[in-house]
View 1 (spheres, one colour):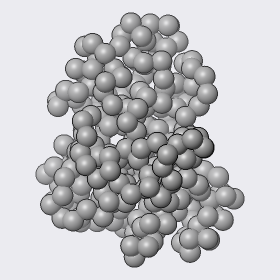
View 2 (cartoon, rainbow, N blue to C red):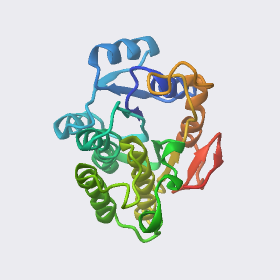
View 3 (cartoon, rainbow, N blue to C red):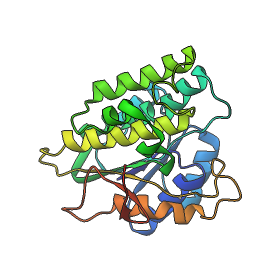
Length: 251
């Protein structure tokens, strides 16, 4: 079973479609139940409504599946404007949402399972400056410290001190920086797990979606290519890495 979040349109839909073409049993999920169910019917797969910001919704999904071979955390938002509330809402979906879903489904992951975080090149560490970059890049960064950084970002945006501390004025960028950090942390935590789970992040590139806009050079199918590749890696493949166009890139 492959579970993909945010499949009602765009890259998520393309990922689900490509995994079906590879012969995987796919469970499509999205917050928009009407559009999500229509997309799932079009792809010939079952659908489960999922709001990644809701513990109850995530718990309902976890309660309805017996085993998971692939999890693709694709659901994400990019909101207009920038203030503390927009920063909080963006992190709640892009970072905390991915964590909620992953942690809920992790006990159901089967041996050889693959976890893919659909990230972005906009979340490369180069957008963070000073000591903060070193803090996030540290190989000993814990999930508690990473979550504390997320909370600090929202507080500092509210106080107007975020730029001085090294944060960019973008909730989306910070959400992806910290999603990447979570990828590294989770891969490290799972390195001794006997199930041999692989956890990686993918940059799909600039894709023609609601988020990417009509001028983007890549189609959703092209954007789905690397996430699908990571979702179907052979045993012994890389873990805790960041990829674009099926090639490793710097965090």
